[in-house]
Length: 93
Image (cartoon, rainbow, N blue to C red; front, top):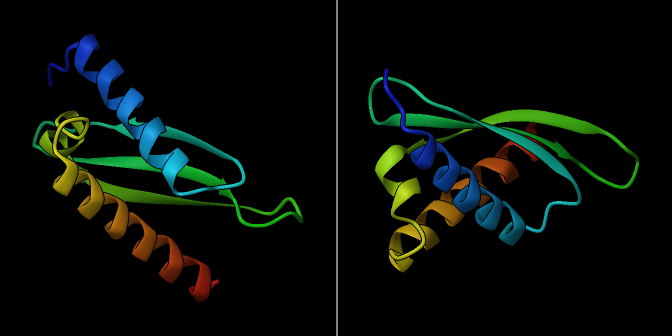
């Protein structure tokens, strides 16, 4: 697996923008790369003001994340997908 540092830096930058749009109280994340195009975003986030944190891995295609600054439709689709996953995760816990 050969991921360019520039690609990973861009992916992190886009991920920060997307996560900020989700209005999470607090979060930490890491991009999980793989040899195929299916990546993951490992997210630890503050559930509420009580200080409780949870962790989840959000799926993301490498191409979607790297093109996300220019592709508005792909960006919104990914945000909607992540919001749905986070809602389902919150209601399951």
